[in-house]
Image (cartoon, rainbow, N blue to C red; front, side):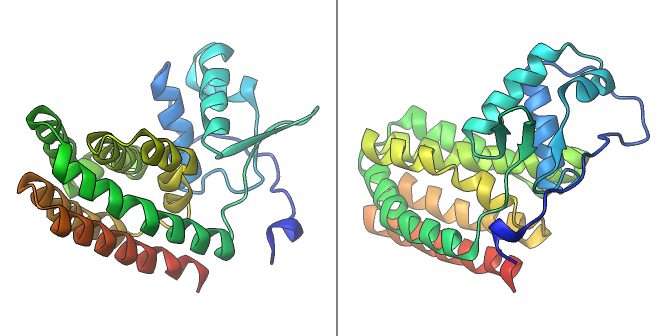
Length: 233
């Protein structure tokens, strides 16, 4: 069934059978993102601001701020007189186009990072990578997968930043790659295998080996694409 043929999902009561703690700011964003990535609010599902505000025990302001941010990420869409709904997942064609663009940009970003990254930036890269562990996902409960996707995005952005090419970095940022991909599946092997691939990329950057860094990034993008393609099978 194509995106155009998909009927909007019914309005969803966003409860979990437990008393919610009152998150604010970025925590509201993480909460909503985790529900979307876990398909607790499916494609087309309506997001009711006042209902979520009551459930989380916060004002409508941080809810609206989170929704604006999710809209910028392409995760939710706002329609006239209908409020916010979860955006459709990307189609197979969009997915393949996204992979093609990543293969053009990300190996180049890794190559440049190996040539130009500072010692402080390299240390920051390693810190982000070290925080992305299976135990982090397990101990974070329902938010674990969303947190991993955010740190994955942070790691790739830091590599692009270290490459000192603002055009590559801005282009990758506008793709919102990680949110779109992580909406496709939530299998453990997607996160566990990525951890090892990240380590290879950072090791090559740390050796200041541009060819190895570009190769490791290309391998990671291609392997990641194979893992996510199962969502379309």
